Length: 386
Image (cartoon, rainbow, N blue to C red; front, top):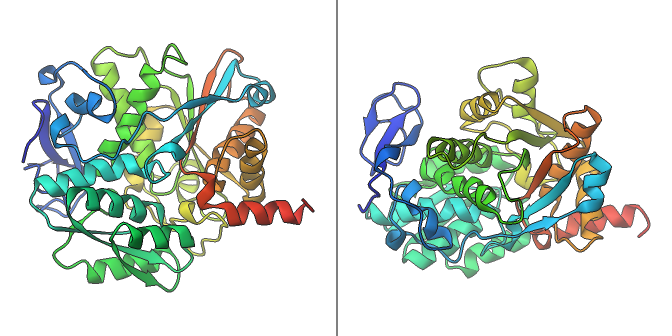
């Protein structure tokens, strides 16, 4: 397995033991979750462009990375929204411009690279949809087979593209927990790409922080990042990424970080509001936004820690509010999905709580293109007689 000079292995978040990079599942000692650790003094300087530019801060060198042109997504100014929120500037980091139209392409690029470097021939994961499509595409690029376990409510475009990219798929009646159970029973010898059970997924998510810190548009790291949250890989990735940059004196401070979830499935928000150390499952999840309906995120403890370290928290928004957030910005030309609309709705709620300062620069993360969620966006407009 080819690794970078800085990568020091995988450390268990429970028992603290360190393991070989090939051990991409759970801790062999205690079954805890593993997390990549680094010796930043050994890290090379950033060089080049694109996803590979950040390889010195990742586990694998640029020449090993399996990528389809991941990252480099635009920051789109939304001045009218900035005025509404009472901040100096607001931007949308449009992750829908990634190869399969989703933020999770960053995660799949690293996770599939790890599997390929470890000699795997087949990967598998449970997914609400976008992760399966990203995994199938990157696995195809690496010459690996893939298998996605998806709930029946997954959008047709995700199901279709998983197969189009050559991936196998099991459609499970029910929601994400049922897909997760089917995955646990049917993974077999395949390498797991499940969120947090594969520690390389949120390592890929770190690159979002690196891009925000280097964005010419911003001239400096933003003051606030608002991120729609399901599994929480994005939140943990942002936390780790900005922590890396502080250690290398690339930024003075990390942005204030807020997670947003639909109020029908808000396990992270509930835990934050209760001051809990762990996330408890939502017994009856119910939201129109399928990609955000993960009632018991595996890495819940890590997500809460990331939010605590960054000193801020999480908000829950209604389905109507997130749909209005998405269609409102779409009317200005942004192809934003309902998932991204949660960031808009969350920012509005936070502004109502006076969470922002007048000189703040705010970034809203749009995790997926609106083309994957066009049916529910159109239905929302039809209810309004449009």
